[in-house]
Image 1 (spheres, rainbow, N blue to C red):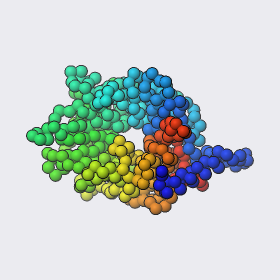
Image 2 (cartoon, rainbow, N blue to C red):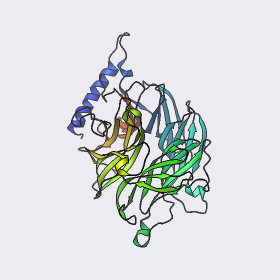
Image 3 (cartoon, rainbow, N blue to C red):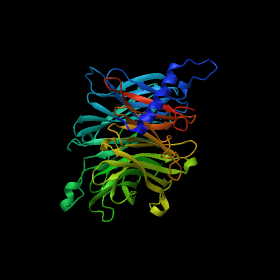
Image 4 (cartoon, rainbow, N blue to C red):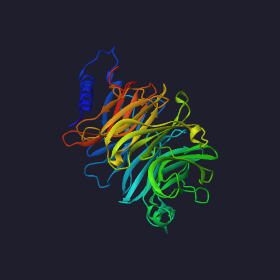
Length: 448
């Protein structure tokens, strides 16, 4: 069963799709399927949509996973290129002997794609796969690396990649690692669970050595990085989360966003901030640079949930200025939960994706499971002050999904201002998973 709100919107979507695909149009009328649609990509088996990036010409590059029927290679990376109308240009699979888990795709300034994934060696043994690809889908360079690979004498570790960013001389990968040196004392020593990973690579994907760049940082407890940006030749900002007790610095409490600075060799400075609210867990999952039209800086988005473990989630957003002083009264432009009651999401599905609108404000996409037993897409828009630009009780704050679980990948905007969503949808009687691409108008609707 799906909620009345979901059911009504699904009916609208279904009716729109019937109109789009069933009607013949005169040659003088623009084909409406170029303006709004739902399309699926993949063959036999399951294909998932994880991330997307849009080229200046409107080309859409989709990244996900494929687990083809009868495959002996396990889960592989699945990449698709389409035009702005969703027409398939090419599709490729990449991977090795382990299951690959797609994480991030970015366009580089010199016209390449950089792709990030986890390579799952075991239940708690991930390595990181970093790869560059041409716009035609041809692999250029790749590296498979983990903390055990870097330090063969060390123990196996679970290295979990989150994102990749381009730097002035290569790339930097953000994520987490269980390869830690305990920073606790007494009862807290056993609670040093996970640290931040920030691996730096050259343009040809050679990792910087430890003498040139510090690869991890962290506090007591569980820490992670969602994104690292180089902001000038000497400074990098790390955006992540931590459950360190901010007031004492020596204990464990609820999770908060965590922002801090690295110097030229990757060593953290004492300049740190912990955006979040006391008594709730804030987990950062998406960071973007905010453009001029929305006020330059950084927009951070993730989820907020009760520390009681009930699994009831809201969206949490934080806007920071472009150059940080690490003084909250100066740097915070807004910091608040968006009370949309996403429901009892599984922790690994509590994800938010944000994207700046060319007009101003930000598109916000997340999973929701508020009054149903299935996950759906939830799309809304906030303005430059963090308020709802689409009223939350208005159909413009839309839910997309059917009677099975559907999971978001990312939201983005095409050069003409139309919105695209990517993710994973279950279709057909066998509920096979397919990489989904949804194209909407500027207001998040299927109709003009």
